[in-house]
Image 1 (tube, protein in one colour):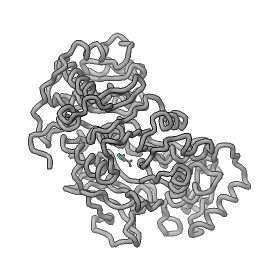
Image 2: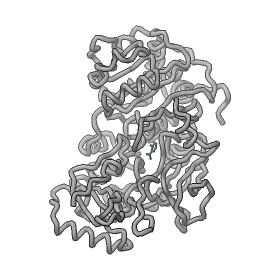
Image 3: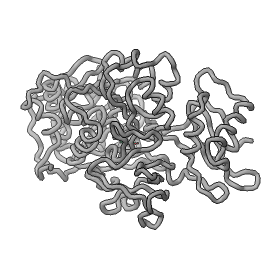
Image 4: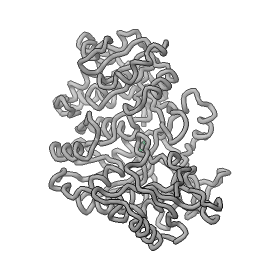
Length: 515
Ligand code: 3SK
């Protein structure tokens, strides 16, 4: 139970010193290892540095930061001082940053030197942004975080927040529309760390973890930072892009026990036969997948090759982390598992009434880490946060054994000959073909105006598309699924459009019929 007077930094940062973990490594990044004692001091110095800019409780700062120890230092320094950090996706465009910086009214931006060019052109258009602080060595005419931290006091008084104070925001990209700032409270981070990190993953202080998903994602924030800090474990941070090469190097060099990835990454690593358990981490005891549903075949092949099961789960920025998941020893590939302890799930029809087991509808969730609202977006907040229940926009059904099976985003479903078809089911069938790396399926109208599935296919490395292969893939899907679901058109593409969290943007593929 979280007491009413509560600041999350007391639990996630300061407690470790009293618990005897001063010399234990909290983070490993490109610069080396950082102990819990060093982290605690960095957090204090970063918090004082922000206060020295005139910030006080409830002010907001934006963070556009790569994964180094500066990220947790600034994030927790802000929270400890009662300031509200807003980590932003580091992969966005100048226009996106203009929108989020002005929507959030952040007074300070902390940005990695490598990313500064993306915001420089818009700085004159942001009158509420008072300071830019640079993480790195090139100040670009602004102030260096390292200089400010060196000049700051190593002790910081914890702000007198309550569990219901706003702690941080995260922007939810969604697959369409402008990003929405999901407002999270001080109590939300410990809830995900206990219910998912401990009760599902079983993370302990002996674990060494590595998340390919970056800290600015809700998924990466828990994986790479709060779950390990919650139990006093060690987290390895990767500043660069999580290419298969970079990820495999970390697995080999640091031998993590828990690895967090996304389906595309698992699929791409599997497509290269040189990667196997001996070239990765022989200590892996759990792998996690989220971002989009993990194709059954990818899960099975990964477990066979790497000797560790993948726990596929579903989370959201709104719920902060995973609330529906597979469990150790009970993994059923091709499903998202069952409700995480502490969360309740329902499948509902469009009018909101609960549907019986086996029927497909929208998944709604109730649990202790839900955001309170989207900032400045009343209508969208009302549609998503309905009393205790948060609407996910994902279509699911529960199978005979009680496992939740993904059927696609509400707006991605297609009706073929009057029957609903889940694009995900057709994609999973295609991906199980050895020559296919990835697939996305959308509905397209044929010459008579009737909607039929169309597939965009990324072939496995070394494979070449042809008319014959198209026919083979069509026959393959027809044999695996009800025949009306087979893709009437197949287009071979180099890559699929995706959101930063790895979700396929099917809307970008619609209306592209060329045959
Ligand atoms: O996309 C997901 O499945 C997810 C998982 C955990 C946290 C956040 C997100 C968006």
